[in-house]
Length: 331
Length: 288
Image (cartoon, rainbow over all chains, first blue to last red; front, side, top):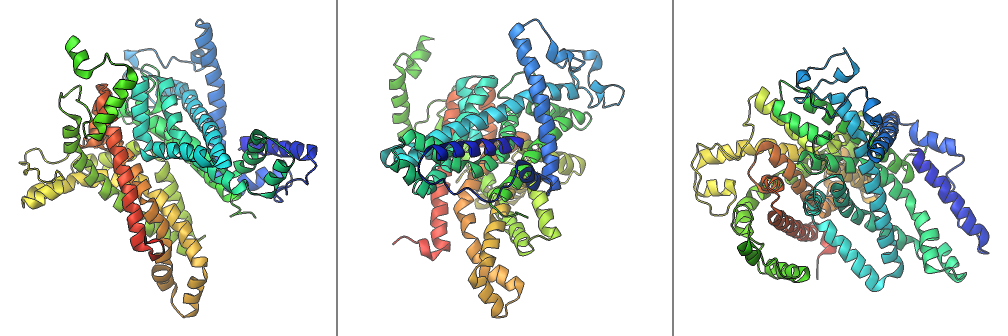
């Protein structure tokens, strides 16, 4: 959520700068915001479900940043093991003496039980978190950037640019996302990067449509004509005037979309595409554990519970953001 | 090795190979499966009807469920019923298809033993001759009712899994378009004429609110097709999704490309059908 608030204030300062330096009257500022905190307060604290979702997401992101940084440090130095030592147990090592232990409160690692290979489920979930968060952030960010470039250009220039870009978008949207992602990631190869590439290729067309729609409605507004009268270049008009003004509803959609990325990412992992064992992955853990149900229910249960909790949190928060931005529930 | 290179024409430059692929594609030749050594089109022709049957049933069920819940939520906006429906669809919408499919399999098939846990049909029954390829229709044509019943039983759980994971978006759209329709002047006029709330909702507003659902039904079809890949894998339901997963594990790229093309074409056809249906439902957009 605070990302959204930060972006808003960034947009505001950007608007202030462009308007101040030009002789045209400033764009009519939206009236419904007073200070940062009350804005934040109105969005979140009025809705308990959204607040709960926000807390879960905050914990998930904070842990992912912490653990992810350690994993990156480890992979660069190749000698340290910070990411594993901070967990207090190795989720990658095989240990058949601890195979299929049921959940118990004896130690932190046994809280969710262990799988056939003796990996602690809880530690595996924690170890896999940064990849899910990374996939969510990277795919949405890249999808948004590509969509912003193509969609805004298409709407602004019109003509054949629009035809080419938007028909391309339609072509990508014709195939269901998951099916296209499967095809692309198989063509690119296995591993985390290929899944990221596949998801980005699948994700941008929605944003291209969004940005085009926004830019179409904005490009004939007074402030754009004013900027053009001042001799502002096309690029500057597009990215300093049109894009910042079109972001609000798209950001709300993006918050909801992180959950969709994580959902697709775990569905791909479930089908065996992406990160390969022994590196743990939520969807992959679920799919492997399914063979051991009902006796070893915890193997699939806890990873799927985590996926469910995080996706629902993003959905609740995004739903609330959309309500607020469309002005449906200003109290 | 040489024969393989010759057979697939791998020495040609990549653009040439690509245009050859496209040329073949437009002639209905999707390539030769690397595992089964059979034309892709023949294999898909066998699996496609099975999946279409599943996905169409699932989509229709999801749309009916979504329209129903969406209408109820809209007509009691803000009430506890509305909140409950919202809670349910947010949860089902956010749940991965594999989890829903597996829970259904575990509870209904394994624990309660009400329905078969997986497969397309009871393997002990003799298959009726394939006329259309759709198992249900074939069984009816051959008047083989025990086979029909078995296929139907095996279909229930996958269809339910598909419907549960996809009905949320229909509910959401139906709710907002219903709310919009109930705020219109014609709805107010209907109230003034003395119609009860039920009559206004189901007779006046309903026909006006259904438009977006018809337009978007092609989208729902696409979502359900993607969901079918996972659901068919969980239930070992021998359709396109099952074949896709097999192709993933055997790294059968030709098959995956062919499947993607076919699924893309079916979604485009679904779009066309949705547009025509919209014309049927709303006389304002009919073509001249």
